Image 1 (spheres, rainbow, N blue to C red):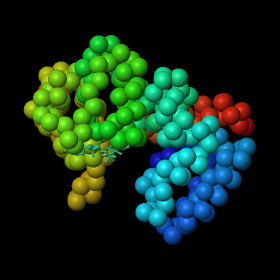
Image 2: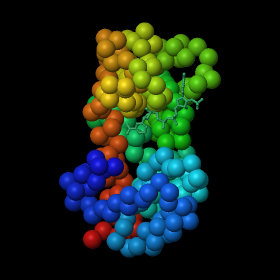
Image 3: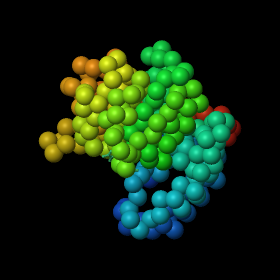
Image 4: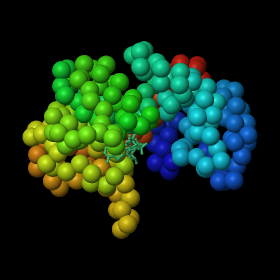
Length: 236
Ligand code: NAP
């Protein structure tokens, strides 16, 4: 959240932060979202997940106006991504696509393998890669022979949430490896889902953690917010 606030400042985007206590009720949170939905000076709303157990995540996401849903988690925006006609893309998958584009990597016909099928990363990532004509495989905890699938990937996206899960011997020589994972180790250091030391020896290109997808996620949040301001006519 600190990085997001800082990014807003750097971009000249006005932001308001509501650091609510853990005991905040669902009603109170819904009330706040309703007031922000109606506030003309606010273009985008982001509820930082995860939420405490007594608050239903779906109810909260559904309460955000789809036009202000800069995280693109609302079912309306999820559906728009599915049909390929969207304003907002979830920030992390959007950041991954931007990295691929800026690196001049052509996805057409490429084998794209995603490890992870969450609603915020794996699934939207699959749709975005598909829209760019990649041949997409989504893997998850029940996938059989995972290494066989990952070794087939020209583009491998790791979004598992397990430190150093993807090893070098699970990667095809020359593959593009994008590590979405952000894991905090016992020694407080951050590490990704890919074992960088072994993976970089085989990969053609690889993103580091920290400093890879993470900053891109924040950049895409800024992009979505500017878009929301234009779409909603709330830019000041
Ligand atoms: P998540 O909701 O926990 O999903 C993890 C996915 O990994 C699930 O689909 C799960 O499969 C799959 N998985 C777990 N164990 C597996 C195994 N042994 N083999 C294959 N697949 C397995 O996590 P998430 O929210 O997508 O986040 C994933 C990682 O990305 C985390 O490290 C998170 O911190 C990071 N992240 C980073 C950013 C960023 O800005 N860079 C943003 C969001 C998330 P099942 O569905 O079968 O359980």
